[in-house]
Length: 370
Image 1 (cartoon, rainbow, N blue to C red):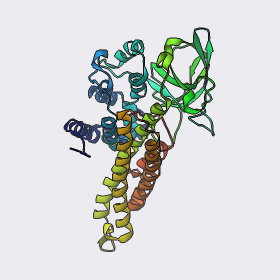
Image 2: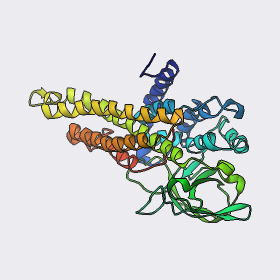
Image 3: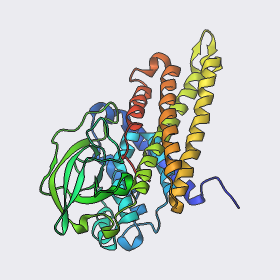
Image 4: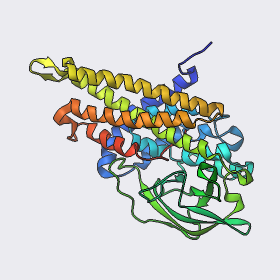
């Protein structure tokens, strides 16, 4: 029997995270944004839900037996509905864990995965973005040069989430003379590696104020061959990038749904010239389009996630989902501000924060991974 809905287990996960997002993330979102501070106690509460260990197989100390990109997409939507900034912070270890589960050797999994099965939040991150106006994931400037039995990494990374406290970084770099994503490699680099410099000041962004970003500089950082993710086999660059891009898209979907669920009741209660503005045709069309696009985005993300889960190349589906989600999320956020009018840009309501977060989220890759 074909079903287009979540399983009973996925439905239970969704309801649990929906309650957590409403009671914890949504409540902390505005104070954290205003203070540009990440509440450590909230990270602890999110960690207790097992969001990281759920992807780790039981033989390595985790709670799961198999990663499910579809389940992760459902999780990210619900957490993004609460606060995309805090959700990305809570799930940043997935940027390290998921590629390790997908591509890591047995030795790499046994060495690093147990770090994330403890009772306390453990930070690790993905160093992907680079400080270039012409940044292209298929042509990274960070390079891995073979040196003896290992490698030397040189380059610069920026907008590395949770880099202020990460114990390890998964650094993406070009590894040879092949072209495009076929040349993409990933290396496990500890925080204290010689030649690795972490900028002392956090980067300032338009949105996602409570999510700390840092810059990294790699000056001939020497790593052993064992630090190359996947060992001699390397990684599937397309799958890794598709996972990261769909993760960000799922967060954006949650944000777009939050905007819609705020705009609709506001329009029904806000009276202008004796009539609720929801009855005005222009407003009614905006609200109807929000509903249509939120559902459309969800199906596109789930389709791409299902291809990831089945092991086929999801590049086309991911590109379509990412392009559509980025465009429509910004449109929904902008229309949300329009529906609320003057209340849309003052801080009594979360709409202006959602707009800033939407703009930042939809231009970044590498904030979460499916």
